[in-house]
Length: 497
Image (cartoon, rainbow, N blue to C red; front, side):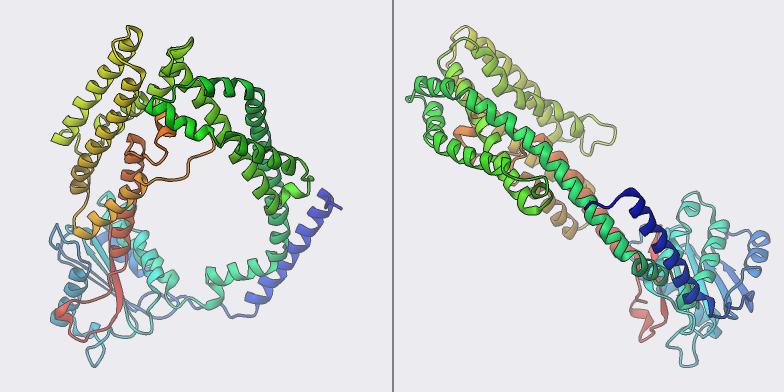
């Protein structure tokens, strides 16, 4: 019996009460952590970007859980620096030369009780470094740097530094029971059962709704195919087999009735599903198979009709031609995303100029083909060949332009390979969406895939995102101290802002 709204509410209230009791049990018996201001604040602003009158009083009032020495060091590093180890090595060099008390007795780590915040405003790097009794995880170190990003982006160096030290004070020596992870575990433990039930119900209801919608769409396609069976047979019987396109489409038609019979069986199986079945994965699989079969047949009978009309120049052939040329026109229009936008990469390059020239040329050729068909100057096969040839040329031009875009947006061979990989994925043959309707060329050459403007734009977007993520990952936590660090292994890391 379905759970009522009242039962659901009662269950949630009980779970929330249990959660509160668990949290009280978890944290109530722990002693409050002490709060102490820094033992000492040392500011070495060699870059000359900090306001000492604002910075020092603010840092001296920040409360840590344990007595801590706070050191702030700024310097102007190389502007084109891509390696966080440069800042790490510079902080270590400065400590060795100017503040040996920042180092442990053996010189291999940072001194106990120490927290260092380093800033390179020229190279746009920040670093945080810790004595062994103050060190925190790399994720937490990154959390500290994240607090500075917006302020440093506006060159607000003093406030950004204060924000970083405030966040460090919250994280250094934080008791385990105040960790967000611990609280999350407690919440998950208490609400797990309730969440599972609610999620289970929601997923099943959502699956049922989607299956009903897909079933209705499949029924519409199946009904259309059934209604047009006789017309489809007539169209197929009058397609000229001597035409290369006609012959290939007829090859597809030879299995039409077998596929239709399979769709009929799937239709019966799908409609035999109960409401409960529509909530299950097995029911979803049956509905999806039925939808795929029905919609594929619906697309094929349209192609058969268009092939007959166009190749025989039968009544309505103009609309059939428009349906063949339409996707290429749309593809040409989509070139604007890569060639005309304000942020379009390589829009003034030779490869972009070649695409612009092709775009106009292809439009002119398609328009001339329409006129040529009307005036019987070209055959339907020649017009279809023109579409296929223009697709191939567009694909080649996009591949060339991809090299221009990749060169402009990458800084290394590894990044170029990463971006090319995403572009290749976008251009690879893939399963069509159910609302896709093939044309005559697609049906005659089902294994013929070409590089579209849409797949190019998608590949560029995914490639750019992958490169940015790789850079962010590489820069987020640089922990080494370079060759000059020797065997030094103090805790800390740096990151770009």
